[in-house]
Structure formats: structure tokens, C-alpha cells
Image (spheres, one colour):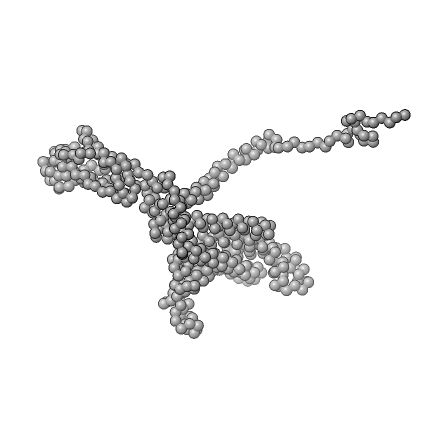
Length: 434
């Protein structure tokens, strides 16, 4: 008797038809209900996302746009033709001669205004003499086609008039309605001309790399110092004791006090002529003459960094203390039983728990310190080797009146912070599990 082979598609011997069926696969993609819910969620979030995007992106795009424009502080306002009208000659009675004068000028010193047109409604009671060849009178309506105004253009149009009875009855004064003066001018901010001279001027300057180095030194040491002092303060106040709340409030004073108040307090305290610090140092015999703390290199930069550390360590202190108080105390008790010293407990138990918050604080403090302007400007004004990139933005934009160069420096600041953020999230944040 010959063995029969199973037909194609039939289950092998010893297996049921149910076990031979392939396992069902879940449907791919989202079902219609999930897609509808996603559309509804995005629709609800769209106004918020749009508002946040506009608030963040539009100023950034404006800075990039201005950085490639040859624009100065005076170019922020588009050039316009300006006119003023007055009556010369001091007429006193009907029949007196006078002069109707229009003083015209271009508000810009270098931009051309084309197609300038002067229009005015002449008051009743004035008999008009010879008009300017460019002017046409239709009843009481006067129109003057003045052509183009070059940069810095000024002109005076004088029209002889005779005083009539109607004008005398009106008090011999011109009406309050000013004449109209219109024209077309290209604004450098909206024009299609672009240039990289702002960036070339920045990088060609010998002082730029020195300013960048000062910015990095100020940022790195200010950030690390604020974190270390905040960590030390958190360790001091991690334990409960009498007066702990008062001490915490005192620790917060540098951060909550107005910056202009504490900055001028430091200036007065370390003043070389009347400062208490210099008087104390001289009486103690530390120095024979007064020290100009904020006026000589490199002491001025050191003082600015110390001010940064003193003013902003409370922020690190708050975050670190909150994280330390959330750590389970059982492992410290076990470490005490094993004979671990306080330093070993801190280094091997506390520090691994604090690395995450320290990394976040380092990122935030680095960005904020890199962008810091008011502290340095109030303490030294950027002098004595304390000129940072943010101070350079102010000087380029307002002291030199070169808005384009100031925006170019701001773009450089953005690029530096972008590189730092990329490196931070690429390496440091991954190591700390952020």
C-alpha cells in the first residue's frame, strides 16, 4: 500500500487546520478616529503654536535681515519730504505786500526722493503774484511738481501776495491745515540690496577676537562660579536648624534686588577714592595705595565675574537644594553604617543624583551669561578689558550708529550659542540621560 502525500495547501499530519493558519497582523496606520483626533488636537494647538512661532521667529529673521543691510541708525525711518509754510513781511492792513514762503527739505542725507509733489489750498483774501514755473494754480488749489530731491536737498519757494479783505478779516494768519508734500523713496530696509560688509568689518577688526575671548572667559567662569557657590550654599542649608528660613531669604537677596541698585553699590564700595574696600585694605596694610578695581586690567574682568557669581548663585542654590531634598535618605544611613565619610557620601551618593540638574543649570546659565549686557555696562561700560559681544552690539548699533554691524554681531552671538547648544545636547546631555 503506497503512502499518500498531502495535497498542496493541506496541513501536515499531526497538525490541525487552525494551527497552520498564519498569525493575524494588526492593521497598519491610524484608524479614522485617531486621525480625526489628531486633526482636532492640532487645530486646538494651532493658535498657540502660531503665536509662539511668530514671537520667536520674526525677531530672529529681522536680525538676520538687518545684518546683511548697509543700514545706519538714521535709516530706520524712511526718507520723506518735509515742508513748512509761513507768511513773511508782517502785513498790517489790506493792500500790504507779503511773501508766502514754503521751506522744503529731504529728511535723508543720502537717499533720493523722486516725484515730489507739493499741494496746498491757498487762503481766501490773498492775491497771488508770480508763481514758480513748476506750480499751477486752479482756483485756490496750488500744485507744484518739484521733481526729485537728492540726499540733503533743501529749497525755499517764495510767492508774492497782496493782502485782501477776507484774509484781513481772518486775522492775517494762515489756516492750521498744513500743505501736502508727497514723494517716492526706497527704504534700505525693504530694498533688494544686500551686503556682507557688516560681517567683513567685524571679523577684519583686530579687536573682535579679543572681545570674543573676553566673552568666553566671562561666561565660562561666571557660569561655573555661580554653580559652585550655589552648590556650596545648598549643602549648608540642606540640614534643618534654627534660622534656616532667614538665611535662605538672605541668600536670595542678590538675585531679587534690582540690578542697577546692587551694581552701583559695588561701584561705591570699591571706589578707589571713597570706597570702603580700599580704606579697609590700606588700614590693614594689604596695599599702600588705592586700587582701581573696575578701571584696570585684568582686575576689572575679575570683578565683573565675581559680581556675576555673587548675583546669580541664588538661582542655582534654589534648584540644587530642591533636588537634594528629594533624594532618599536611606542610602545615606546605609553609608554611615558602612563607615563612609561625609565627602564620600557627597561624591558617590549626592553628585550622581545632582548631575542632571547641574547640567540643565549649566546650559541655562551659560546662555544667559553669554547674553548678559546690563551688569557689565553698569559696572564698567565695557572698558578696562570687559567689553563683551553684547556690549559690542550696543556700541556698533547706537554709539557708532551702524545698525547693520550691530545686527551682524548679534548673529555671531546666535551662532556661538547654537554651536554650544548642539555640543551640549550631542554629548553632555546624553551622558546625563537628559
